[in-house]
Length: 363
Image (cartoon, rainbow, N blue to C red; front, side, top):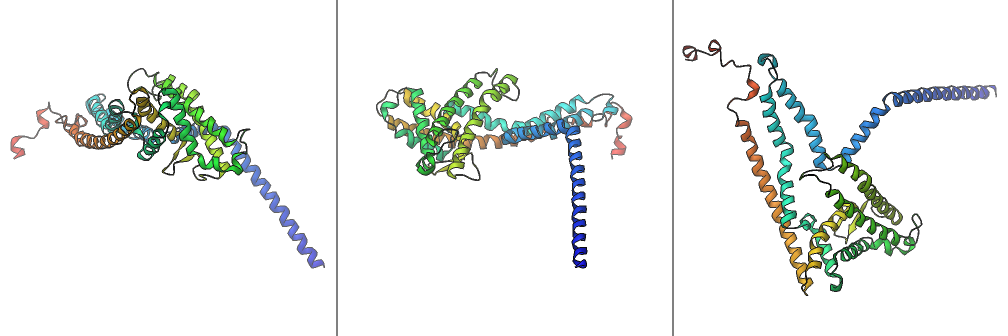
């Protein structure tokens, strides 16, 4: 009995000591965490926000920022300081040469495909930006609409958006067991209607944003007013649309891995914001052209416009590839722009004959 009591007491003492030790560690960790948050909270928040800003952007934005800050600027600075003591000052020629080379071989490589896209939008139409599988779905959906609806552009566009989105969320709406349940006091059909309305509002705000450009190439990276407008008008709408889609997918058990995605007529899986952009490109090109046209056979016109968009997309891709390859081929020629690279100035004293080898020495 005493032996058992001794074992029990030992276990109790060990438990008390372990709990005391854990409490001390917890207290120390809390103090350390508090100290870290107090000392580096602002800096950490800035890093987190910067990282989120990079991740929220596309590949091009991330590449341009990282390439510029990590490679281009340090190389230009290094060329600027090269042979400073020998020259008796900064090497402006080497810095200029390095800047031209770096910007053309880095960020400049995107100029050709972007220029091709801009030309295609003007000459062929914005529908060339729509993926082929989405283009097929839009064409079928628009062609199935009655011709008497294809007269007023704004009304037709809203009806087209509504039809596409209702078809996109068809499986959600057919799930009668859950479709009647309410998300924030709204049924699934009401949520889809709200998504349609907000996508139209989003398109309107993007048009307003484009009107704020001061010159070709102006954008949110260099225009503070455009950036503020995007944060206050466009970002909240995109967030609301994404949240509603996520709630719908959660309710009906769809797209558990990518909850902001949708299925477009079982032909394509894409993000809801991408779908909104695709519908805008299609509507402002093909839908608008059909509504403005007074011919009776609108079905034939839709076929021609869809074929034009597909062929234009193929031509655009081939042209962009060819021009980018040609541009890449020409960039190395810039390295021969000067007979002598400015970075070697100060190392070779051309004015001092004593520093040059004599003919006899050369022989």
